[in-house]
Amino acid sequence: MRLDVQPWGETMAELVIAARAAESAGAGVVWAPELHRNAFTTAAALAAGTGQPQDQNQHRIGIGTGIALAFARSPMLTALAAADLDELSAGRFRLGLGTGVARLNQDWHGAEFERPAPRLRDTVAIIRAVLAGADPIVHEGVRSIRVRGWRRPYPPAREHLPIYLAGVGPAMVTLAGEIADGWIAHELCPPTELRDRIRPALLTGRARAALSGPAAAAPPGPVSAVLPGFDVVAAACCSVDADPAVARRRAANVVGFYASVRSYAGMFEAAGFGETCATATEALRSGRPADSLGYLIPDAMVDAYTIAGTPDQCLARLTEYHGLADAIKLSPPSYGLPPGEVRSAQNRLLDLVGSV
Image 1 (tube, rainbow, N blue to C red):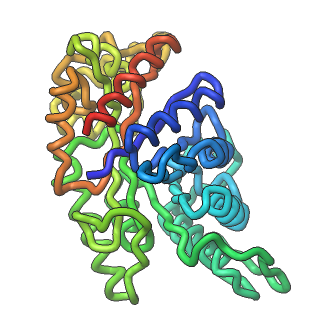
Image 2: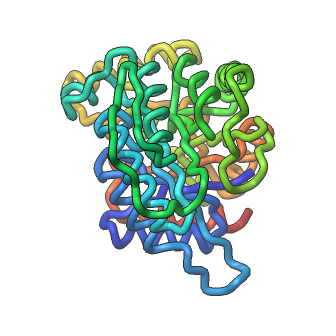
C-alpha cells in the first residue's frame, strides 16, 4: 500500500521542505489541500521543489490537489491549471477535485451549488474536453461550455492526466467510481467506512462505467489492488509519539472540529458518539473556537477516527487499510496546535513513512 502525505508548513518554503522530506522518505504522492492556501499555487511550489532525486535510485514523488474546489473556478481554468501543473511536474500531477459544501460555495465564493452531482459530472466532462484539445469544445448541461476557434498550442506532458474526486455521500462516491481515475477520502474515514460504505458505492460506479464504455485509463503508479484501473486513496490524521497519550491529545482537536459540524452528526451518532457531538456543538455555539474542542473528545473516539499512538501502534493501524485502499493520505495533526508542536508531529510522521 502506498503512503501519501499532505504536508504542513507555516510558510510555503517550509511546506516545500516537508515535501522533499516526504519524497526522501519514500512517500508516493504529496497532496495540496485548499482552505488556507490556494491548492494550485501550492501544487506548483511542490512540483518545482521536488522531483530532482539526489541519486538514480530515489523515486520522484507525485503531486496532487487534495482537493481543489470544483465549482469556485470555471472548468476551463481548472483544466488549464492542471495542464500547466502536469507540464511543470513532468507528468507527475493528479487533479483532485471536490465540491465542498453549499455554504462554502455560495457564501465564500459566490458559486452555484444546486444539483452538485450533475454539476460535478459536467465539470469533469468539460475539463477532459479542454485537456483533449478539441475544437470546438461544446458541452451542454448544468455546467456548459461553447468554445470555437481555440486550441491549446502546447504539447501535453502526457496523453492522460488522472482526475480524482472526493466524496462522502453515496451519490458522490458512486460518481467518482463511474467517471474518475481515483477517489480521495475525507480526513475522517476509518477502515470500517471503506469496507462497509465506500467500496460498495465505488463498485456501483465502476459497473456503470463498464456499461457506458471502456474504463478510464489507470493513473500512473502501482497497479490497483482494490479496483482495476482505479486508485482508492484513504486519508487519516496521523499523530505519532512515544507517549500514546500525547499522540491522542494532538489528534483530538481534529475530531473535535468535525464533531461540531452539523453535516457529520449522523456519522458520529451511528458510531455511538452522538452525545459527544452534541456537546461539541454546544461548546462551539458558546464561543469556543472550532479547532480547540479536543478536550471533549474521548480516547475511543480519537482511536476510531485517527491514527494516533506510538510508532508501532500506528504501523499496526496502517495494516487495517490493506485490501481496502491503494494508498492512504496521511496528515500531521495541526488543529489548534502551536507551529512548533505541528512541526514536531510532522517530523515523527515522516519518520514513520520512512520506516515502512
